[in-house]
Length: 428
Image (cartoon, rainbow, N blue to C red; front, side):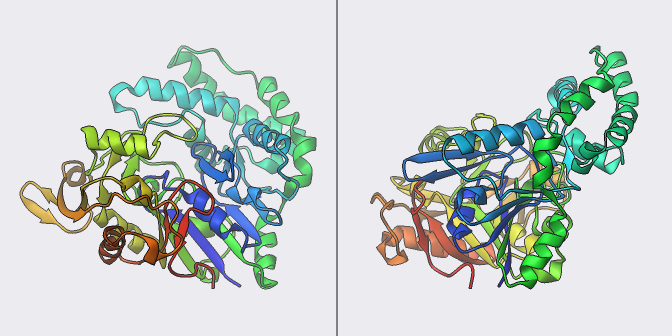
């Protein structure tokens, strides 16, 4: 049985939760391998809407084992708040597994994230202020706190002391904030230790044994390709590896075990936070996409920046991730438009670029070159086969598919759990 990697192909918020949920009944494990509670998935099941931030969306599917792997940074308070909220709604959360090697977001990470972002002024990155970046920075600087440290108070105290020695100097002398006491952090983290302990395992071993036993494992990436710390629009990116390569380092499963890479792409494009966005719209078309697509952040509530579909970005994502299948979401949002522009290339200073420019400055100044496709007016939310879509909608999918570097195997046609058209099987 396969190991499947699922990633975002744009700047996030593409609807990965819906795709994961689509696959959920056919997989045994759903693994979150990067990021933290700085991104969210919204999943609609019947009349119920679930907004998940830290937990893998597979937690909503009975029988699936959800896993928070080593590449994730974990805000433990958020973790238990989400678990409590789901349990109150009757969701079984008892199967959750958490890597002993995952790093912990502490109070001082959140504080530093917020004060640093304010200090940057006009140069702000646009972070969520949830401590993600500072936690990953501590990980790379080898002063991070890991989940396993909560089970050894002496080690935990030593590590917190080491981390705060420099951070308190920064908070007091640079940012004019109060110093944070070691006991305050240690006591806060230790209160979760007993509740956390039964969930904590060697998730790398667990996942490799599952694959050896013929189980199907889905690796669910947070954020998206254009926010990847190496391959995104740096520095306006997240602090982790959001591409398919991150699934290996973030889970302890070797790359040669992955059978399929599925990338999620909206029928248009959105972005949250700062950074270049060639097809961004500032007119009534942008407002239409925002309103019709309800483009507001699951985690932050911030209105998303909106724009037309960008084929060079899709091709870039296909190449970087080794995409075998695209899932296109929110095709229904385009219903009612007479003409639908699609970005096929960029103009940079009079020079045509058919691919994403290697130079960030060029990408920042890129002007989209559009091809217009005919729109449709028919409601497509009830379609369950490709043939049931209006001809113009079919043509839109086929034309975009040809431009994007991989086949479009499924199409989201509405917010409901079953609002999807499947063209090619995503598991077999």
